[in-house]
Length: 79
Image (tube, rainbow, N blue to C red; front, top):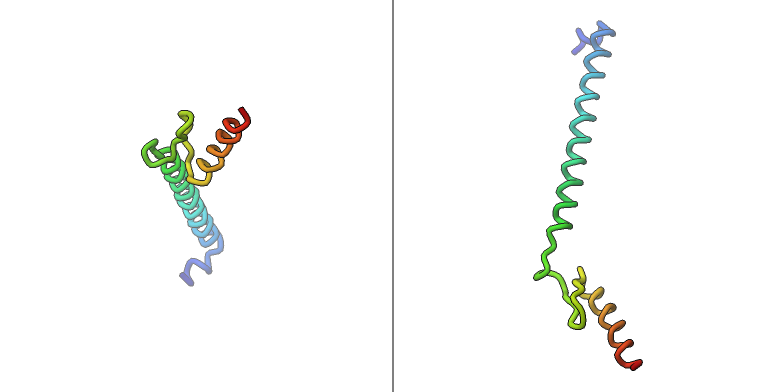
């Protein structure tokens, strides 16, 4: 390593190349993680989700279904 440090041009070239490889790998890992996260989001099935008893709407969470159901109940009680 000392040998390389003595030859500034070779040292600079090697460190620049190492940084470039590191950044490329980092970006690839981030892109893969992003794709995996998106795939996990879109794989939510209708059986795992919460379906409204009044309409065909599927909610992703129980609290979302609760809020949506209250809207139906308000409309039904207003009649």
